[in-house]
Image (cartoon, rainbow, N blue to C red; front, side, top):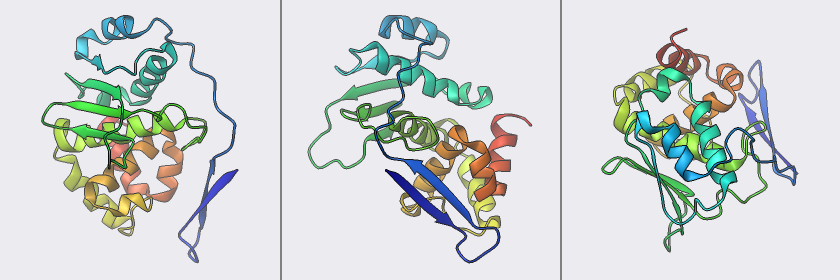
Length: 206
């Protein structure tokens, strides 16, 4: 099963984003298999911590590690003192992840690592959710001035957010664009070139 998202309908050039939703689950990465203690040692300089009952498999820790390294270094260096919680979802909560700026906690809820759906490219859904929440971490906590610059860039690009969920508000618009940029930068540059330029100049120095 695939999802097709059509952008700039009726304008040239039109763009179609194809997302795989079938049973093509990617195997867990092999770059980290030692679990939470080694993860916290590896990220000690950033003071990253794991919390919650859900980090009981090495594969989940490995995907978190992979997601973190999907961020360019200049963005990654802005993150500090983050607690990554993985646990049960409270009743009534619809989102699969949330960023809490008051505690610097990135929360992921049970099930986010399990779906087969691949949100962007070959990356599984969990990596997309992590990147989305790290986008919130940037614009809410670690790089607050970027939201205004993002708004200007998006306006120059036509003012249309990159997804339906991004239409919720400016915060979600930024987080959706940031997640897409980290996982498929060429796709974001095609869809929103000025936003792509902003992220590239601000977080890669290019």
